[in-house]
Length: 125
Length: 338
Image: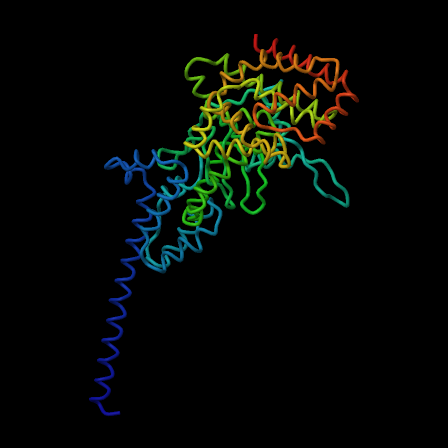
């Protein structure tokens, strides 16, 4: 292999690694956004604006169930996060759901996941 | 009659034999639904039809209320017949087995089951079944009502009794429920010694009570098919499938009247029953059968020769007991609704 070929190969590798890094960073941000939106939707404050809470609570129990599941599901857009939350997470009992998310979501986002609104929402008190 | 529902103990197979355990109590304390025998609901009086309980925080809250149906776990639809801060009584059935039953659960447990559906994202799987299930709930509640006066009170009460309470007619409401209780208890007693007569008298009795209102009911049934579904469910249990085809129309009217005008109708029961008893007071059993036959003709119900013969046999075999049942029933009703 000539020197120029070595340089060419090095440049190709550099471009590949850089693009991978950019892509990974982009994905990670998408995961963080998903996690943030999923957390926010379980907070009372996000429903209190614009009369959304009143409208939600005027629905009958079946309609409210449908509306909540539809809106909650729409907050998560990436396939990887959907797999964690809607496939693996939802097969667990309610009390195990949040601990599982705290363990699994950081593996995608690289940051801790803290959202007390989630257990407050899913566990009846 | 005690206003309590007891959680019944169960048996578990341990060390090669069945032993009585408190499994159901443990389940209830763990906020799980526990089955309640229909006979208990039958003796549980009065249902707190107007009570409601709010569970959960402002976002995930549910209002638990009699007469409202809720999606439940395992594809079950649930219709609450009573909700207080201590317990929720509800009817549930499975789509697969079509067997309705009564259940008791803590309000938090009931709420948790609903929240589990949100967690499971189950709405999209149950959404298409909700409308259909509502019809079936109406029918199945009707079936349960047919075998249990309390279930009957639930069916009527959800629509009518609550309204009556709102209008400060509490005594009238209680009287109506109590009257229905006595009637069904009477029916149960008579059933054992004169089953054919019981079926016929049930129709005759309701007819006597509610004569002249059929016209109103036809239009009501057309306007709200749910009422017809309820009535059909009740009738199926009241008179049996064999007689259903023959008597569906007339009895539907009657039950629909009870649904729509339940209190007014029920309150007239004692005096109307007295007339019915008068019709049965002849010492000649054949005359009694003719009286019944003529009365039924007015609602286009024709007694078959076999039915007539069966009633005659029942009257001849147990005339003293039958008369005593009718007499005690009228006394009971008169004392109840004073």
